[in-house]
Image (cartoon, rainbow, N blue to C red; front, side, top):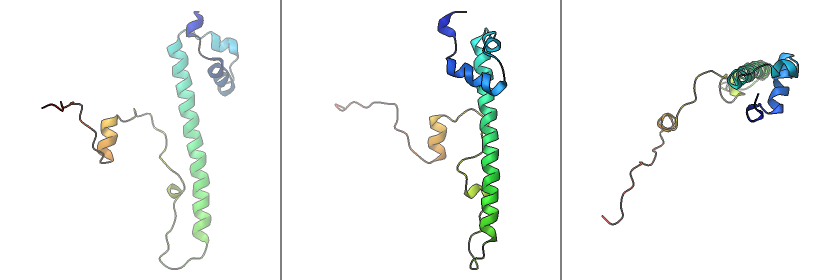
Length: 117
């Protein structure tokens, strides 16, 4: 295997730790695409697990807050009030144009106007 396509040792150690594989097992992955596909999947699953833990903690915080006596009309909190963002998903990230239209931001046009005209 060519040294130029070897994944960084940090990535190899990360997979070894998360999957319980030895470095020799990881070295048997000849195709870099397979290695990075496994790395991305493990990373995604870890982020989903971490988000679920944070959601459980946020739910407990909301439950504790909602048991405190308050004045009438005060806001009842939900777990989402303690979290920023949503659960990780496998969807492709939005492009710049989609994000701009979603947030009502007008992007500059690609046409360059001559000042002399």
